[in-house]
View: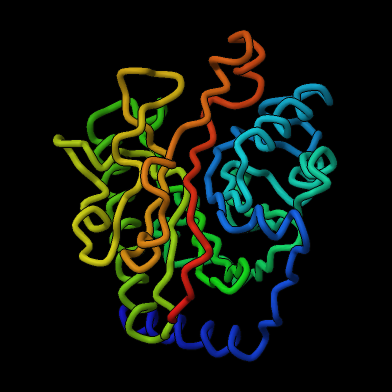
Length: 300
């Protein structure tokens, strides 16, 4: 597995080195705004393509979902639970200032990435080593990003949940083991990236289905204890369950963490903005975002 990871990282580094083009630079007022980059993640709960959707949404509800994304201030936003390309296009109709792409190997719950027009975001591909058990786990989605003179990698993830279908302790333990294996694969991938390439700015964003604060049955330990990684979202609370910590996270390498604007990581709690029924129609998760400064010269 380690040889495969190294080969994967080497190939993607060569591909990006050969294929990247200069970023489109915003001009005037927009350029000044881009001195801060807002990066985030949002599980949009069964965003369907309009055909036999698990969670049907009206046009008004899609418009409200888009408005929540806009209000989050995110420039680059990882999404989870997007059915397919058509589902993403239904959302982007209400976000003309954004572009995006979505994976295809996650069944009805794919991960996606959307970003503001004018930023350079290049899809690398789906990271299949996260499919530790076919049919029950999903791949990651990897992209190379450039904002101004700063470049970095973003991996969008949706790790294995412990759902209501895990009705016995045995099933819950299997779910925990799968999630921990995925966390280990991510830690190994970060190691490989730092060994193979010169780019040390990396962000893992998504629904991790756990908190790094968990004491009993922790599953994110390979990431929490990784010497090159830092959770920016450890202390954030869920927007739906105020006594619980969020399971949606932004994790960055220490190199990238130097750009983090201290205190900017937060949960955009739209449940405090809309009546409960309207908020539930948006999603059972809230956007989690953090800001990074772009003024310091990029040295890798």
